[in-house]
Image (cartoon, rainbow, N blue to C red; front, side, top):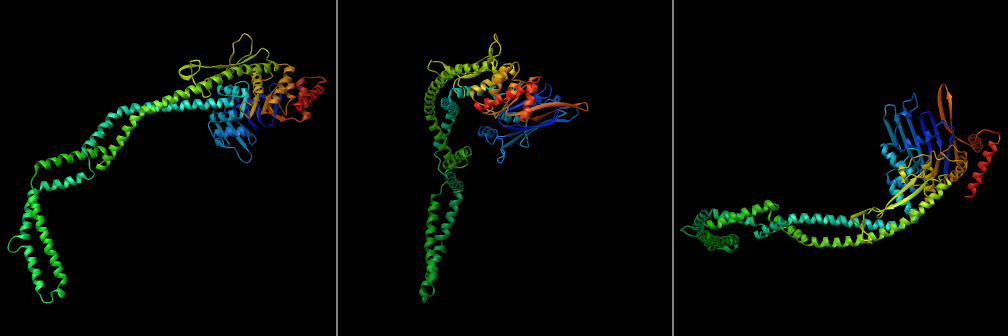
Length: 572
């Protein structure tokens, strides 16, 4: 609830601080004392328009601070948490502050942190509904109106089921849209992928092939030099009078014939034996190589062509034979997926049609109950309006559908545009005078009549319109004492569900207050000063007597009025 409101340098208010309590808080005072200025101050700190004209003459700025306690209201704490607002865990306090300077600059703070004004407006909407001139109300929000109708009719579970069904339809539509986009993209890529797979596959790549080909090419390019070298090596190893093989064999013979050769020269004899065998093998290999090396221009040309192909494919597909082969396998996988994309799309289309029919049936069933409940809500609010002096006013709840070719299919063969909660658009309509047409609640002229309409609606819905505090200004405009007592009782009843603040001129309403403030003004040194004070029970009697008028009996009437209100509270 709103725990404290501090106002500085606002018109005739130099500085005043009000400590509000739970239940019904009433503000009274003589005309022009500044009662509605307090409502204006609250609207300002909640992010309303900043008007330098509100600034007290001779000052440089106007400031308002509002302290809210939300520790005992889990619903409000949850709403603030969704808005990212941290509440002090120790005392459950949230502080809103705003000031406007003479040059037009404004400063907004939330829990001591500078924030844009729109943040205060958003947070303020979760904390306070102001019913009065130029106010903003959650009850005027079409989304809230639909939820209010559903809550009135007890349709929460049915609405949740429809919301889940509609969300499933939206999910499947999104998947189908993605599938269509993928198919279009696949059609554009299919030929390219097929060409790439064929290009790599027909090349019959082998990992490491280029390296082997380059070695073979090197031999072919130097075939003549290789043959000459092999011939010279063969001659040195095996031909001529003094060739290497004969010399090694001669040396081996000398060692073997030496006395005690086996013991003294064993390792050397063994080494020479190995050398003779190796020389023989080398000579044979050189001879064979010399005989096999031939110039082959055709093979060399084939190698050059193959190497060029390998290098081109490697540049296109990853830099190596293995990378190109990997690219081919990936492209094959994509082609296989494309083959199944149409089947997947058909599955999604069948699932979407089934989900749409199911959601449509659920939404139509909910819509029919809403339409019946709308009439009941209209009748209940009309009865409340008569009690608060609005016998000529009317209130209607419109439940409408909008046809669309791509909407949810209904059993009647039509398709309706889905909303988050079905196929309905709910609007609260009202008119305040006979002969006028009903208009959306947001467009009905604000003032006392609208405030009473909101009070009636709150009482029927048994809700605090989503906000922790309700503020009613001008609610007593144009009503008499009898209706005033009824309005006072209803305001007090609303205060059992949420904190209520009311500015009033009627003593019948003021008598129902749980906390009573009096706003007064005085002239000192040629300046007007206004301030507010909380009244004791005895002071309340005097204030209500003053509101009743002059005469010896007004004090007794005031006491009786307070006693009747107290008795009414006990009976409730």
